[in-house]
Figure 1 (cartoon, one colour):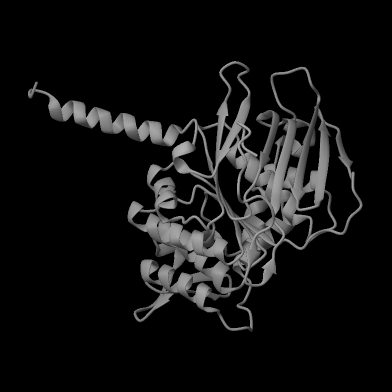
Figure 2 (cartoon, one colour):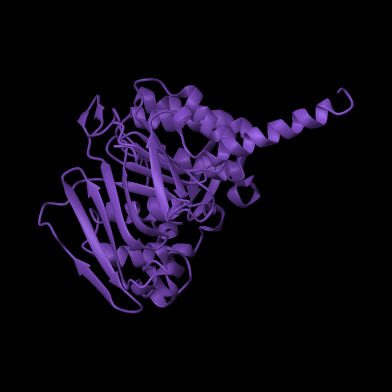
Length: 356
């Protein structure tokens, strides 16, 4: 359901050639980080998060990623939240919304009929609540942060395991996924097309030797430290598709995929993201880029499950809220589109000088 009450057509799990996959369906926050009171429903396909800086796009994705990770470990949601957000001193109470009198925060993430909820008490106490006793769903996930890590991967995992270094756990998790060897089963046609599109852009395939990543083509092996950062990011996406991390029933979180990418590559990136959701992968990405958002609008079809989530500060309450729609033209507010329109108007104004 959108903020305005209009129904959305994509609610529920995504139907694929393999059946019905589980998916993140909803997140609810009270006094949690940037959010005073927020509830967002998700598409089982692509979820595009937009909003000005400080409106909680990354926080929303990290919280959902933390819930997905519970299917792999016996740790609590509160513990994973702390490792993913990394508040000072690992004090969960610092995740309580600032600026008010409340000293308790809660986050509740729904995966179909299952959900996990945790509460934090400021400033230091951390409490976990388990409100349901249901089997954990099978929902693999990967989080691609803005900062590229493959070039700095050698030695990182052993250092992270042995020392207190100030990196959110998403970096460790991402490298674990990148190092996975390919599956034994053959690549299907859909994933083969995705790999081919990415290989054409980056000029080869990605290989691993020891803990180093290389771009491999007819000219040989080029280490990632000498590779353009934008190509490294696409190389990571290639790896995650090739080794089976991104397959039906998984979730991809990608923070600002446009960072360090030439806009000419955006078309391919969006083609791959749409192909992934058609193959049963639920996708979340946060963006500040007009071209990236418009590529999604132009390439999506009526059969694609796409939701645009616009996070913004309400003028009356000054609190962050969300408007969700399945149509690009219905996004409101749309700070990306507004900035582009203003830029275009200024260009026209300058071009018309001296003519009127």
